[in-house]
Length: 342
Ligand code: UGA
Ligand code: MN
Image (cartoon, rainbow, N blue to C red):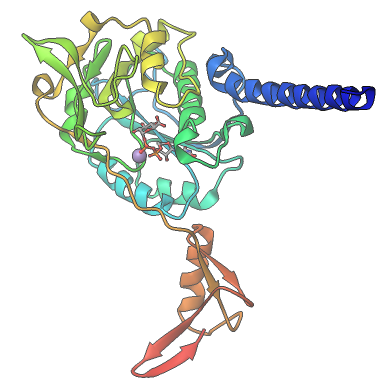
């Protein structure tokens, strides 16, 4: 090898090493999001209160309803997409049947959405609405890599800690299906109650396993290395128990949100209260809605002079459709065989 060749060789090796070093630094930054302790920090989230009902307080300063039964704080993370309004309509109309419930809706959004607040107020349920966006560093193109609903639930935890001393916390996603019996089952939770969730994973269900009234294990097709392999909808926590652990939080770690939150509460398997007839009844279902992109409507005129003008405006404010005058799906209405452009 002559000296020029050696020099070329050295230069090439150095370039390769530098590239490897850059890739390693970039990857370690990515990995830090999930493996470091940053995902446990409780102080970094950005939250705005969009709407809050004047809560009824009892003489101890606790928010209370008209009766002495414990209030359920039903926490719903939600995020803007085409299906958001219909999902929340269905959920709101379930919750209208439940007494002594306070609905905390936390939207994964930088700004408050007035049409969302308007819709939620319509149900007449004691309500708090927040905008609690997920920090950019946790965004990903792949849905399964996003810690979904975590920023929202953490915002709700902070609200509960600041506002209430008693009651029961339950995380109810916007797309799940809830049997009204669920609420009677979790209402008297002392520390943490648990119950089966239908339509989860390869077993079709995720549930604690109970023997002689005690939880002895978990039936869940993705147990991984989790101590509490349970879905978010499969447990409720008493506010008193939550408030005993001011540091307890939900991690930004996909798949481990439930387990690490329950561990951070200092929960032991012996403490779990099995409900839903000793975990033999399914009172909550992990239903999922098919998601479709926004309909991009190609319009001919700004005004059609028909009911469609107002109707389509509603779709735009809900994020269900967008309007365009050059491209998109051509719009028209029919009467008999006649098609009229809109
Ligand atoms: C499953 C579990 O049932 C969830 O309780 C859990 O949070 C989630 O996995 C997870 O661990 O990541 P899955 O149906 O796969 O839920 O997820 P989604 O329903 O899409 O999201 C869960 C909740 O977070 C929903 O209420 C959704 O509205 C909300 N979300 C989702 C956001 O706030 N932001 C997002 O970007 C996506
Ligand atoms: Mn879901």
